[in-house]
Length: 98
Image 1: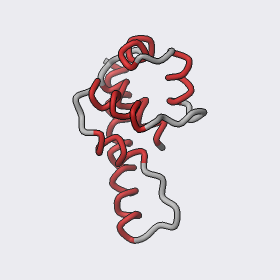
Image 2: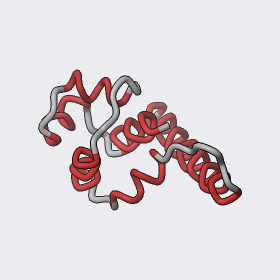
Image 3: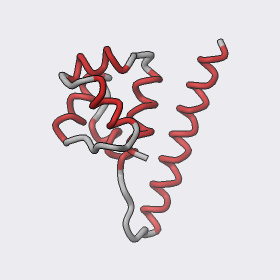
Image 4: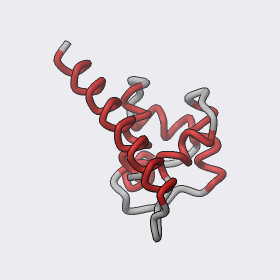
């Protein structure tokens, strides 16, 4: 889910992979691998990502959280994160229609 959250935040802010990669100081191909789930971002890179989009790092981590053996609170957080991602996907689709 981490890769999808990173991609959707970028798309929501209407930023190309090339422009974001430049701002983060990484290659476009590396950003593509992050967004496709082939690579995992470092905490330092996530911090740069959060700063680029003027959002708290905790928001990115909230979406990126991997749940091992889920507790009740883990399931609630996962459900909320899932709904938030669906909302971002809906916004992305709506913007593409317009």
